[in-house]
Image (cartoon, rainbow, N blue to C red; front, side, top):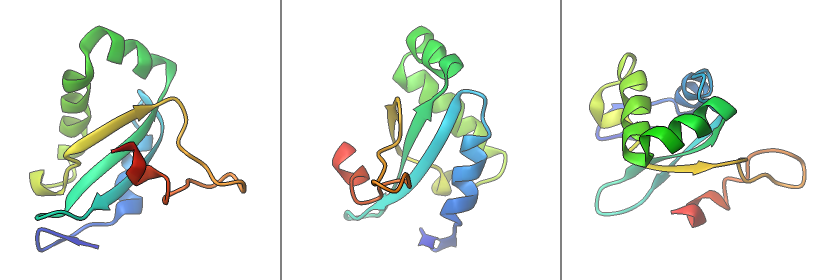
Length: 104
């Protein structure tokens, strides 16, 4: 997909996020607005929940953004984050992309 005139593979960035030790799974979506906004829904691991409790939401988001900054330009990093226990899933066990915008 294109975001701010740059190409971005959502699947690749989701996989990089899911590789972080604080996360069990991640899903990205783009919310249309005046300027499209990249958003992340992430399921925290036990270690991630402990870090969220210790650091707070803003600091946890900043750590994850810095982690992704090793591969992506700042304009291609998620701007909005939602921390969940489990990603919304369809009855087939796949991420429910239709339900995710409702989290924002």
